[in-house]
Length: 287
Image (cartoon, one colour):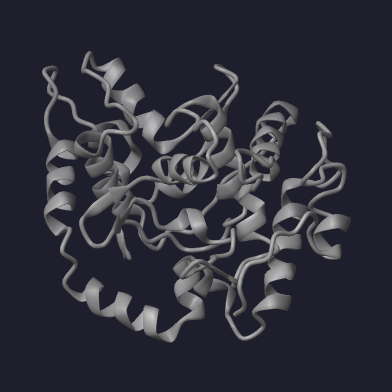
């Protein structure tokens, strides 16, 4: 692992496939690569970078590159300090609405093995629907107040529990049809957009510079990143994926898009597809 260096382009592998028509510094609207070509190109890039790391280990993020960090994680996860938040999320998940229904009743099999299918493209509304959006749709359709997407005490804890119901499920995000592909492309465009005073993109850190060190942190690869949210930073600070997106934008000194808004939903659609086939494990510790 070596310190991060600012780069303006990615490797030839990504240039040839993932970034066909979409350079980090460009403004092209379309890419010639399909979502599956994107994913395959990234997997090939990371396998070249980290030949000794099995693909399944990518769900561990940067921990896969540090035995000490992995050991610390394993020790904390034996008795995680955030079980109280998960229990409170379970209470919300199973709480009966005024009409006698519940959040659990809005999802097949009570919500077991469903989160890996999100986000999905909803042709009726021409929008990407995240797991959190589906929760709010359930609340709305049953006459209940919706949760704020950035509220840790409601949406945060309920997803901290509900996503654990899909632990072990393989990610299976689908991009089917031109309209869905357009949303995916918008998410990819944001992933590669250089923003803020530091002029960095998500891809600047998590693609070509994955495995390098920024300040004191090892940069994790993009593949596997969406499989384990929410996380509890320091063991007690709950963060959802959209909260993390917003924090990254703020660190780049750029205006952050709203949690649950179209921009971050599309970003999550692209980002999640990259982890297709990997097992999920929600509500975990991060330092």
